[in-house]
Amino acid sequence: MNKLRFLHIPKTAGSIFSSILKKQCRGKPDFVFTGDNEQDIRDFWGTSLDEQKAIVLFTGHASILTGIPEADDITIITLLRDPVSLVKSFCQHVS
Image (cartoon, rainbow, N blue to C red; front, side, top):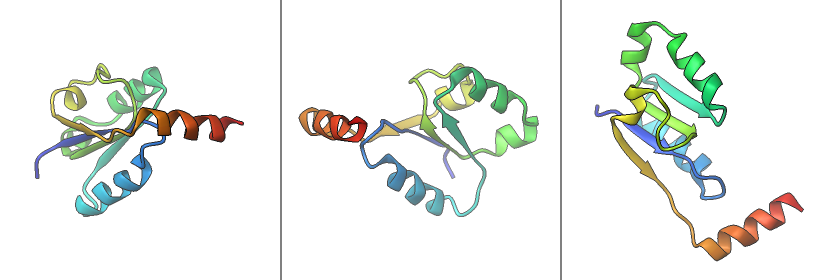
C-alpha cells in the first residue's frame, strides 16, 4: 500500500473522509496530526523507527510542511470547499 497524507482543512467534511481512509487502510498504522506542530513532531519522533516506517496514513490538522519528512515527502491530498459557504459555516460555528 502506498503511503498517503490527508491534509484536513477545517469544515470540509475532513473527519468523515479521514474515517473512510482509515477503513480503507484496514487497521494499518496511522498518525494523526493535532494541529499543535511542536507536539506532533515530539509525538512522531517519540515512536520507534519501526513504528514510524509502518505508518501508511497521516491525517489531521497540520501545515503543508510539518518538519516530518515521512509525512512531507509522500502524496498529499485534501478537500476544498466553496469559500463563501466555508465562511458562512465558520461564522455559524463560532457564534
